[in-house]
Image (cartoon, rainbow, N blue to C red; front, side, top):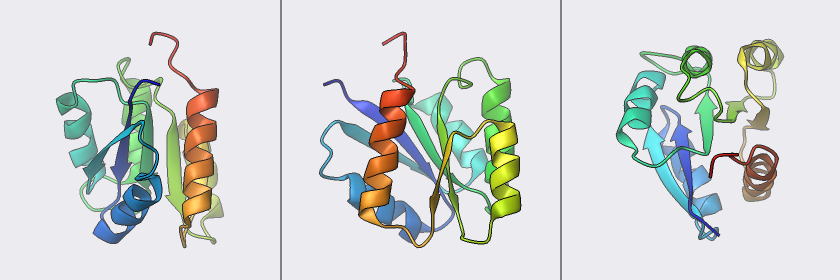
Length: 132
């Protein structure tokens, strides 16, 4: 199986680490991290291989996750990347807005390994890049 590139975007190093540790046994993943939406856009340009999936928090400094989703959807190079939003239990309004902007799924805090692995594998299967 070819390597899949995942970008984890959250201003909390701990959240990024939880996702990375949850996926470490999945050998087919190369993980990239960013601390804000702005940093994520820079990472997307830096990563030479196509990014197959983005996890993003909503509330971050410099550029929030909703703006990141909007910018990805506006850019032809990134609009096909499925985006999973990291939310809190009470984030219904943010979830709705994220869906309207183009997010494809959610994972709720507190994060657990099984949920992260399940949504990652199912999303990658559902949104497999047609050009790879």
